[in-house]
Image 1 (cartoon, rainbow, N blue to C red):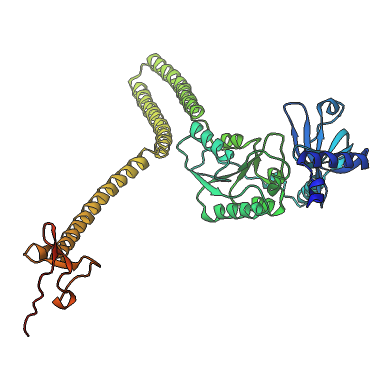
Image 2: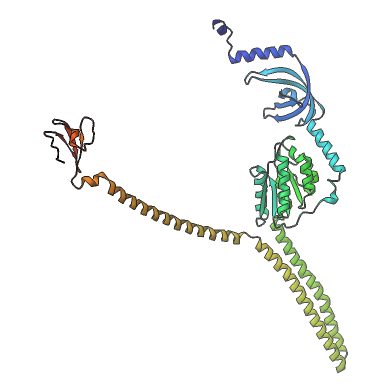
Length: 450
């Protein structure tokens, strides 16, 4: 035990000696691997992991050295680094202090991405001829994404601001991890099978190449390609590209951008209606102008030809022209009014007012039913309580005492006496009455004759 205490280390001492051993055995090493979890700290230092198929190691490249790097590191990039094998004493973690970094080509994930992209492109999945147009004013919008991520909050905020009357259906799915790709495929197929919406938004927020990898899976690409509903992708940030972006009918740079592209701006739509109205008035004036000129010319011609018969014929012709003009004007006005009425009815039908009013009425009805049920249950409980109280009162020993009876027990062991055989002369007993009790001494024991 004494020998063991002589070799006792503190944690700091052990980590310090381990660092010295590592730095002494590996003065400087070159290591090749794939960048992962790259972070540029506000201090200017870079922290990342270097990995291969079986293992990974933590690395640090400090501000004074990373200024010499001629390229921007990012996750998935294959690099060669040179540095000192060391140990960070504060956490006891094994790491490499890097002094230089060189590009060594694409990482394994990036290579897989490029290979799949090439194969699907050759198969025709990216062909513009297969792209479906997005609806101008969709009756319903479907969103395939995580129901708890930031992407869905951004999408719903944009849709509410641009056109709040369009209903939105969320098809929840994981957007990261090994099972995410299969769930995304199921969500897309479910939306096509249920036929509830007219367009699908496939979205998630930004992340590393590993985080976005479910959207680079071939099964997801095939599901998008075979979707009967048009699909717009809004995955990651503007600089992020996935296989899903190339297969989708339209790509948006962000989830918010996807929401903007599938909905018209109600203010722009109102301005378009006003412009159409002005165009309609202009067309009407353009048609009426020549007819008015023709009418003036006819009137002048009649004035120049005085014979009564020609005057009557020209008058009849004038009436015909006037009737035709009225019919054209009426027909044109009716057509434009019908278009305006249809658009107004459709806009009115998209407002949530009627749905909200119906839900409020249902809520009031349920509240009244709930109050009625509460009163019924309380009444039943009160009846049961009254019956139980009556039963308890009938069985209570206090009720017996109130009629003049008493309960007698020995003071030594509090045994309830039921016969004079259980006491002897001189025993002390306690007599319990309705109100209070008596301590007594047995002076005489009398047995009743049978």
